[in-house]
Image (cartoon, rainbow, N blue to C red; front, side, top):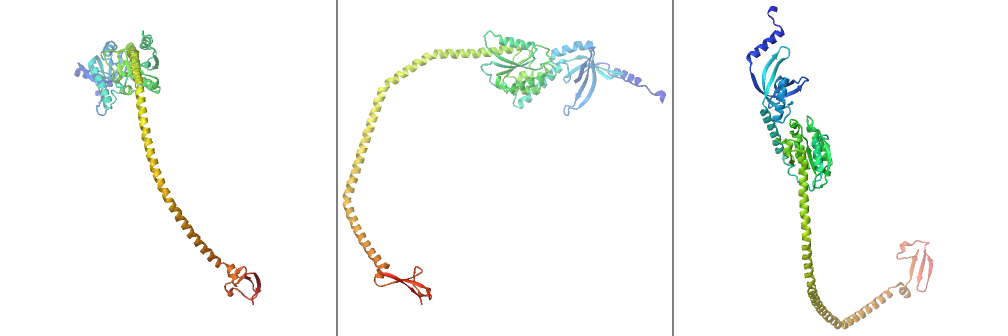
Length: 432
């Protein structure tokens, strides 16, 4: 049995020959790129992966390689056609040969690429992002904002060293109309893997001082179109769509719109075009202000003449109005005088009636007073006849014990001293 065993190298060689015999041709495959990297020699290494559409779990994986002589040709062609860098995460359609190496194992060697497939996939991704934004009701929010007037305070998101930023500022501040603009740079990375987070961070810094600005301008001058993938993300598009200030994009490409171009208030081709757009808006505002000024200058004399005529008519009406008012006041005074006369006549009649009744009232009062006087005299006589002094004068006496009149002998006992009061004196006694 030991004589029949193969070495690992022999087995791998058998596998290589078998694969070459079974799969001798070139094959087109669809896959997603992962772990893309190139070395000093110019060769590009990657992994091709396929994921389950529902669970997103890996269901297939294979190593891939593009030799430097092929990669030097395919990479610029792919990026020019798609506007997308040859990086991990994108889907591609590539023509490969199936290889097996005794040391390095199974791999796929890329010999050609179809950019149309990737373009379709990018378009599908953009369409999905736009559909999601639309379903959330935020797709056109920024477009619906009203552009402020005048448009002078500009918050700029760009790289500080970008030529496009310099072109924008030169065009804006050196405008031939003499318009004054106030700009501030909020630096951001405008190419590479950090575009999304960097631009979102700049937007958040602008939002913190939102009242200081009229509009946001996102500009990127020149550069490879393959660096635009950072502007095709959902999070960045959602931030731009919901931003409370109008967003103008001019990120230096003419052929395709990125997702943030589609959600921004206004999309222009280049940073210089963004400056020209703002200057144009200011020119329109200045034109409207000039028209209003001219209308004011032309309408003031007309308005003054009309007011002078109106005042003349009012002055002419004053005598008539005064005379009419005097007549009304005279009539009112006459009515009031008549009412007063009638009121005094009625009062006088009542007073005369009261004078006729007065003698009878006096007679009745005199009679009543006589009766009351007689009644009071009777009461006085009764009171005097019932007084103690009167009774004492008639021979009665009052016996007092301890200052109180004695009405019952049972209150006395032998030895008590009592006092007897008579009409003309009093004396004390001892009870026996």
